[in-house]
Image 1 (cartoon, rainbow, N blue to C red):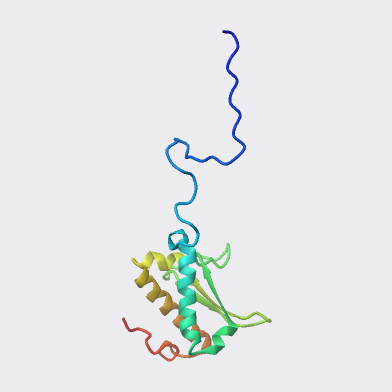
Image 2 (image 1 turned 90 degrees about the vertical axis):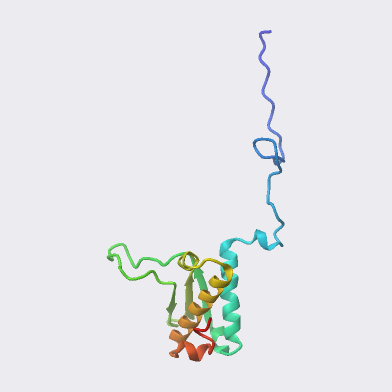
Length: 149
């Protein structure tokens, strides 16, 4: 038997099992199930819920953009490190045809909270504080329940 056995050709379709041949490949849950939502999507939903709560009372929020970024950016390559606490949110005033922006930083908020309810409360506080800064009001004026547990 001098002729070696030729290798099998790879199947043209997707693999149906994992590399050890035990289970199915692919997602565990369908996309409609909350299990399939990523952390970033869940966090963005928390921010949107907070904005929706405030828009009922402050219709001018429709003229603002609300963003979620992973982490705060450093100002530039030549700037020194800042010893202050990591910001949880920020604002950019409207100018040059751009709308005012409220930014919430996802990773610093997630690190400071333990559960979904605590995270939702902190996100709402951050959004209220940033909106108050843009509108030139106190957080208690923007949301009378600000600071209550």
